[in-house]
Each structure stands twice: as structure tokens, then as C-alpha cells.
Amino acid sequence: MDRSPLRVVLLDDELLALSYLRTLCEGIPNIEVVKAFDNPLLFLSEVANLSFDFCISDMVMPNLSGLEVAEKLHSKPIIFTTAHNEYAADAFDIEAIDYLRKPVQKDRLERAIEKVRVRIEQSKNQATWSVNTNKGKFTIQLSTIVSFSTDTYDRRDKLMLLENGDEFVVKNKSFDQLLHELNSLSFIRISKSELISKDFIQGYHGDIVVSKIRTKEGKHKEFSLSENYRKTFLAAFNQ
Image 1: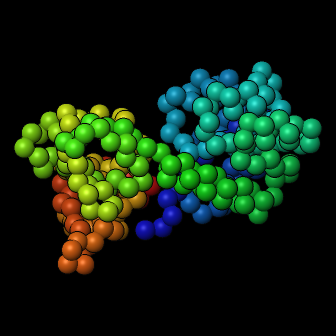
Image 2: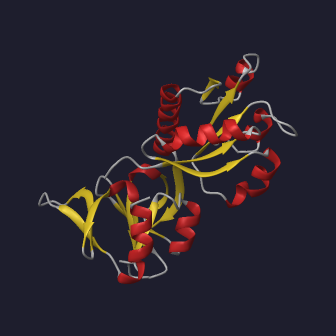
């Protein structure tokens, strides 16, 4: 599977600069422009309903500055663009990914986006989840979770498979609760009884999802794809 696409929201009060930035982003592989805004207040009014990985924002805008916007994105990665040098120190004080001078050059933008990808991967690898299991309360590294299934004595519980082959019974959790508590963009519902991490999907054929996990026999572990979930699975897998 190719590298996962990164979804970006663009913000610049100058329409020509915004259009130019969008053209640059759309020319970079695995980058999806979710939406472009020329008004920071409008952007923030819609941000709760937007699904995106990072933001590219102008620094100097009417009503709100790029720094003020960044503070309201709750640590979402941000790249600043500006024609001014004097805000660079402020940008890095809030741990902005990068600070690009206008007019933005494509190769410079690509390097900045690669930094975003690294930051997101690092964050994903460090993220943990505390949960009650049949073996007590554990803190699990999210990047190690392969799947959840209803293969337990009590269907209110879920069997959690980890990358190293360990299994835990997660107590009294519905799939909706799991998707809410975990990163719903990283897990895909493939049937009424199974949820799998997108990061561990090798591919699929017919009604079989092939994982990257090997069985004791050395074969890739397979999961069944329900017809009822095929459409949403394909949309998430190909995103």
C-alpha cells in the first residue's frame, strides 16, 4: 500500500496566494486539499466539522493572525507562509512545523510537508490508550494494535490483537466506543464483528482482508470483509 495521504486545510486571506498554494499542494503526491479558506474566522467556525491532518496558514491576516489560529487547533501540525521575517521566532515558539517565505517554492513546501509526516508518525507511535482488560488495566501503545473482534464469551467485550501476537479481552466496549476513543481515521470497520487497524492492512481480494501480521505458519493473517461494510472499507483503504 502506498503512503497514506495527508489531508490539509489551507488558509490565506489573499485569494491569489491561496489559489497558488492550492495548485502547489495538488501537485504533490499523497496530499489531499480538504478545503481552502480566505477568512480565519470562517475557518475556525467550521474546524470542528473538518477532518484534516495539518494546516498551512498565512501568518498576517485580518481579524486573527496565524499564531492565534494555531492556538485554537489544539496542537494540530501547522506550516506558516508569510512575506514577513519578523514572525519566525514566534512561529517556532509554538512549535510550528515550518515557516515558508512567499512566494512559496514547491520543493521547499515538499520538505515542510515531509516534516509534517514525520511529526504525525512520531505522535502516532507515542500515543497510548489506558483500558480495562481481562488481565487488569493496561496502557497500550496505539501503533501496536492490530484488530478488535467479538470473539469472546461476552459480546459486550472485544478481543484485542497486538502486533506481537498478544491478545487481551477489552471489557465492555462497543465498536462505536472504540472508534471514538481511538483514532477513528486509523481503524476500519470491516464487518459487524471486526475492526482492524489501517496500518496493518497489506491488501484485499474478494471478501478477504490480508494483514501484515504473520501466523505461526508464516502466512499473512486474513480477516473477512462483510458486504455491508465493503463500501466504507474501500473508501477508507483507498483514501
